[in-house]
Structures are given as C-alpha cells and as structure tokens.
Amino acid sequence: NVTGVSDALELDRQVELIGKVVPGAKRVGMVYNPGEANSVVVVERLRELLPKSGMSLVEAAAPRTVDVGSAARSLIGKVDVIYTNTDNNVVSAYEALVKVGNDAKIPLVAADTDSVKRGAIAALGVDYRALGQQTGEIVVRILNGEKPGDIPSETSAKLELYVNPGAAKRQGVALSEEFVKSAAQVVE
Image (cartoon, rainbow, N blue to C red; front, side):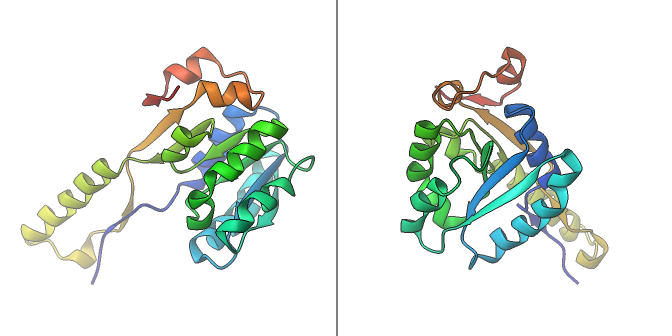
C-alpha cells in the first residue's frame, strides 16, 4: 500500500517543446548512457512518441562522462536538434554538448532547467519546490486517515519553462517573442 509523487518526465510535453524550439525538426538526437535505466526508458518512449509528431530518434551512446563530447560530435549532420533528459553522465559533461551545439549550430533542448543556464536553448523541467508541496499534500491526506493505497501516485503537476535567447542565437535558432515571454525564467 504505497503512494507518492514522481519527477518522471512527461515526454509528450518534451516532444512538444522540441517542436516549438525547432519547428520542422525531423531528426532528434539524444546523447545518453545506455547503462542508466532512466535514460533507457526515455529512449524507448521517445522511439514511440517522436514518429507521432513526424520525427525520428537518432541515438548516441555515452557510457562514460568523457564520451559525451564524442557522442555529440557523432550526431553532426545527422540531426536537426539534440534533446537531453536528466541523464547523469550528460548533465555532468553538459559543456561538451554545448560546445558541439554552438560550433555545429545544432539546437539543444533539455529536460533539466539548470542545463539552460549552461547553454541549452530551452528546458521544460520539474519545479522541485512545487513537487515537494504536492508531496506534502499527499502526506496530509494520509495523516488525516486516508489509506496510502487509495491515493494514486502522481507526477509533477507543475513544469517550468526556462529559455536562453543567447544560446538560441549561438545555435542558429530564432525564438518567437511570445515563446520567450511564456518562460518562467529567461536566462541571458
């Protein structure tokens, strides 16, 4: 009898974000660690979701942090955009990915909002403060006598859009003013 709140990504909204940042994108690259279960699940789901939006996934394995740059370089000429989830190896070496994105004019879209501060164009990520509050609301229900098994598990109810117009310019993307204004945070 358990319940809880997860920070699992709503991948349909991530695919929607890719389309907003790079309209007309057909090939989405993803650098990830095939040994990280979370990333493998994301890759499998993207293989299912992207074709529904007219896109396909091009994978590049980075089993170690030092592999991130070369994996990203292997995508040059093969993708219209690179998407990153919260893969630990990729996030640890994000600057290597940003260098490739900037040099090759490949737009970077992320799930981790901190990646926007590091050079991604945009990210739709979990607001962890709101996630904590959402968890607290479930705890209150349990303390008031509701059985945990009767409370469905939830994912984050609030996602935040972060946008970096400077990164967009460096990666050859023109963002609409409306899109930039819709961001919870604009990073320069």
